[in-house]
Amino acid sequence: MCSSALSPIVQNGTFFNNSIAPQIGYRDERELSDRNDRRKYGLGEKDLMPKLERNCTVHCADTYLDAASDWTEVDTVISTVPDQIAIAPGSLLKEWTENGRRYFHYRVDRASMNFYSFMSASYQVAREEWNGIRLEVYHHPEHHWNVPRMMQSMKKSLDYFTRNFGPYYHKQARIIEFPRVAQFAQAFPGTMPYSESIGFVADLRDPEKIDHVFYVVAHEMGHQWWAHQVIGANMQGATLLSETLAQYSALMVMEKEYGRDQMRKFLEYEMDRYLRARGRERLQERPLLTVESEQGYTHYNKGSVVLYHLKETIGEQAVNRALRNIVSKWAYQGPPYPTSYVLLDALRAETPAEYQPLLRDLFEEITLFSNRSLEATARKLPDGKYQVTVKAESKKFKADRQGAEQEVPVDDWIEFAAFAKPDKGKKYGKTLHRERVHVRQAQVTNTFTVSELPDRAGIDPFHLLIDRTPDDNSKSVDLKN
Ligand SMILES: [Zn+2]
Image (cartoon, rainbow, N blue to C red):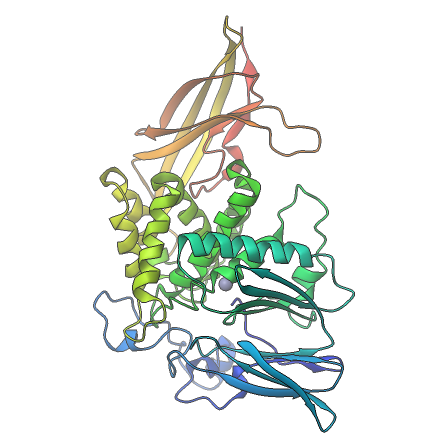
């Protein structure tokens, strides 16, 4: 759920969502949002989300996606021309032909968010099954290249999420192609429309590049838990429970697929997007706990790095226990809806005392580092191994909402690592050593032994910490004897 849908009806296909149906109540998303338009009509600044409250009443009565409905049953009879397939939410109960049109009857397997798509086109359908759940990819017949990757990502996501978070309640999971009139993928209950341009015709032949298709499918599958089972109340921090947790979920599927040492590709990408976007912020940057739903650079990009860092610190099982507890308490529950405190409290309960201050850094404040390696040297030992010494500098800052930064003392667990020379055509060499060190001062020296000739070494080379200049964290190693 990353963008709102256009509602195109074209010659060989149609895509619209539930916003075409009558909607009840006041819809503030329909207000003029352009600043110049608002000024022209004498309107003030558009209201931001209600402030985060721990003991909320009125604002927890609604979800941030829809103020006028809770969990909704949808039963659809939809018809289309004979050479197209029409798709509505839920299981297909019946299909027939009448008066020269093709009819379909669908019903959702479980009351869901009031957030649906309806599509019809001349599709080819790839079908597989995972533990009794029908997996379907509806695509333009010529756009078949990435369909197997999408199927793989759906299966691996279902496998990880059902084992770690809780059950999947739909009898099907569908990815449905739409043309490049818009560029997004979006999760509706059990159904994920996906633009051809960012998925079906993406060129995935370079194995060194991030497999965005796999990543995006895993993110949208993550929403089947984070938004479509647990949905935040209508206040600041709501998207921490949906977008940030969908990002974390996707990262864990990627880690299982590509390996822990490859995760810096994703973390570098997310960090770069966060750092560039926060410089362009026109409102106020907010900590994750009180993020506004429009601040994607915080809930997607910073959120990915923060949750992954926490997982590296307290462990995958601890983070997932917290998430499983949230699902078992809040999935498909009516009002009051949960706030971002629900996530923070669940993580706090799983975080050992020595790491508790990290939660404030990650969620309640805006924390940045400037870590860099000053010198990396190695010495060959008599037994053929190498002793590596990294001299590094670590500075820590707190930013206020206007972006002013103040240096604070560093007292953090930070990784040091060394790498072998990359194979030809590869960006990263094999990891020779990886260790977390409790850093309590800006100048830090760390020494360790590796079994092969190291090529690069440094401080936080995997980019677990938000770092103002991530590029200077590792250096090539000077061999001294
Ligand atoms: Zn999303």
